[in-house]
Image (tube, rainbow, N blue to C red; front, side, top):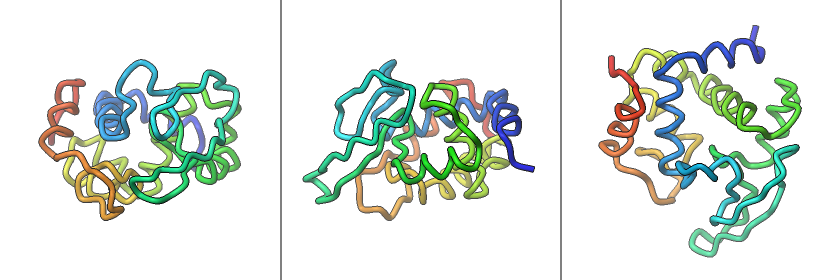
Length: 157
């Protein structure tokens, strides 16, 4: 059964933590303020809930509510709250939510095992900045993602 205990257990894996750092690279949230970042670069300071700030991104001609370390849009966050019962938008809940999304696309086993290319390919459907994404946004090169994964303690299969 999928519950928060499963998500927390996955976060004990050095490869999962390294993979999360690699995701944050392209999302523009690698720094210490990443958990507080709204799409477009501004920050917020209340982690009691998703900020739900709608920002217009002229470069892509879209509005987005993406926020936090993994730039999760509000409708996705609301669904995760309903499914997992996240009580706030804390760093811990953001990390668990990212793991839940990785699990949803079937990439958790790949990330845990260090099959980075497979994990990135599956997760590029979720995170537009990952190599291979077809969302039409700027993507990171695989070499940079892999290097950050390794620098963060990740081990390749």
